Length: 228
Image 1: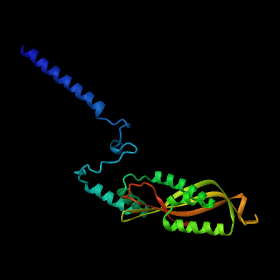
Image 2: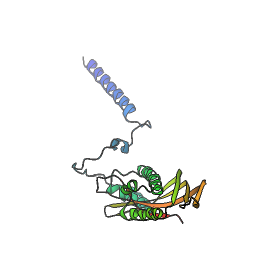
Image 3: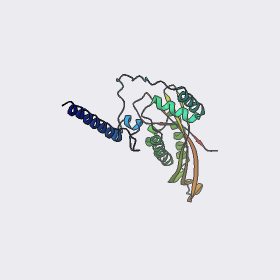
Image 4: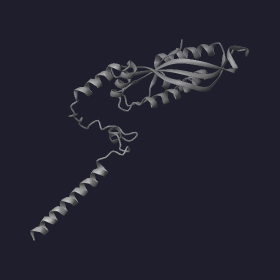
């Protein structure tokens, strides 16, 4: 009788070992398809963290070697990357690619509206100072009764070349390279500027700003400059 009980114990031990091995082979190995920690914690598109939720405390203690590596990474970071990180800390919904996509669209809208003298389209996209400068140029053109024919052909590139945080105000500078058709005519119809048939390449540096504490997600153009 005791021999049978001993045999049962051995059988159960082998069975438990086999089950443990199977669990290890399924759960304990990486297949290359696991979700990264960032993927596991990423919110769905459009979702925002609950502002009333308590801030989770990080109980992870950095090892000396990893802490040293993090310090080296921070030291080697460029001013632009550090400024972008600062903006993201103030605005968790900020995304560089999304901003550049909006800047590209805004650029085409603004230069087209300016050429056509469409103040209503310009007003919500510009700061007061920039709008006043654009408005004066439009008024001068109107006073001289000059006409502008403008066609936006393409935006060849839009590169983020500057960033900064001043308090809660974020600023981003973009260098834009475009191709346009531009022709200006006097009241008699004589060509005084540009060429109606030859594309013209333009490179400009525009700076956009946004109050990160505002619920308004839109960025405002606060300065423009021609690329030297």
